[in-house]
Amino acid sequence: MIKSKPDSHGCRTHLKRVDWPRMETRYQLIRSLADGKFHSGEALARSLGLSRAAIWKQIKGLREQWGMEIHAVSGRGYRLVYPLELLQQDKILMLLPSATRGTLSGLEIHDSIDSTNEYLMLQAAADLPSGQACLAELQTAGRGRRGREWHSPYGSNIYLSLLWRFPLAPIELSGLSLAAGLAVVRALNYLGVTEVGLKWPNDILWQERKLAGLLLEVTGESEGPSQVVLGVGLNTLLSDQQGSGIDQPWVDLTSIPGGKQVGRNQLAAALIHQLVNTLESFERHGLSPLLDEWQQQDLYHNKTVVLRMGNRTIEGKHVGIDKNGALLLLHAGEVKAYYAGEVSLCLNRGDEHANPIG
Ligand code: BTN
Image 1 (cartoon, rainbow, N blue to C red):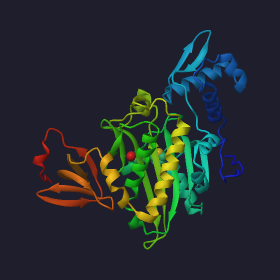
Image 2: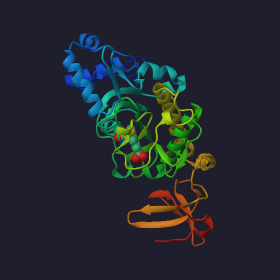
Image 3: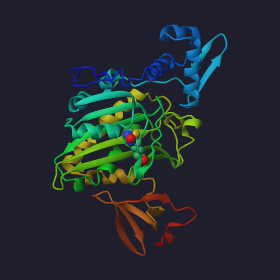
């Protein structure tokens, strides 16, 4: 990996991120095709210094291994069915309000990485300062919550992680993941995507389908300080082939009203801005000032839900969240707080019938 020198913002871009020449050729080919226009095999071969057969082989790889939809028309060449807006450090920095830009200690963009969260966790252990952001076009081992894999194909979604250091004890950060989910909704609303909402603790949904998720990894001393790596995965454009391995209902931004016109750089900047604001405010005030707004965005508020915790299941009416980020469930006439588990809507039941079943 070649590291560039930090620029005036202390930001680095890793333009050549993998020592594997074949992968580098693949990234160059994608960059040539990103505009969605036709490019002849001959022109591509010339600019990449390859044979036309080698270009064809790469195109096959992009289609079959990476699920990219590419048109091939004889006499015209190849074109991506859906143009890609690749991430650019200078664009993202330019789109950030200057205060947020000043708060960031660095912004890295990788073509390929195992996991942006894993990367920042390792860097954090090596004393990387607070405020480092890391984006990638592709993750080879993207991590989701509860040990799930996070599908991370090249160039079409957002994979973003932020490292933040807090003077607080890890236990005081229990509401942070909910605050961060709200920050993602705020960023989407700001960009004109309004029909999205939250599912406890921090899933972002559109019509019961998952658009984005967050993974917070917290380490620290029991009395503080703590460090958090906050990872956001947001689907912007997934082909059916790319989404076929996802084990829950999903949606991409392009399919949602208002989402098509949102550029990835614009989206990355809006997410970074809202997350940085939220992290700063959380350190001072915690989750309390956000409870009303969270409730307004909460898609399951006042609905009967099922909470799964390992092999235990509770059914109840979701009556809110508390200042520690716990889910408040009403069952058997009593409200109890739950800190972990997976919530789903309880279908075919009136809310008045909320009862415990486990
Ligand atoms: C979830 O399961 O809902 C959380 C998904 C979090 C995915 C993001 S993508 C960027 C960051 N890097 C990872 O490996 N995971 C998070």
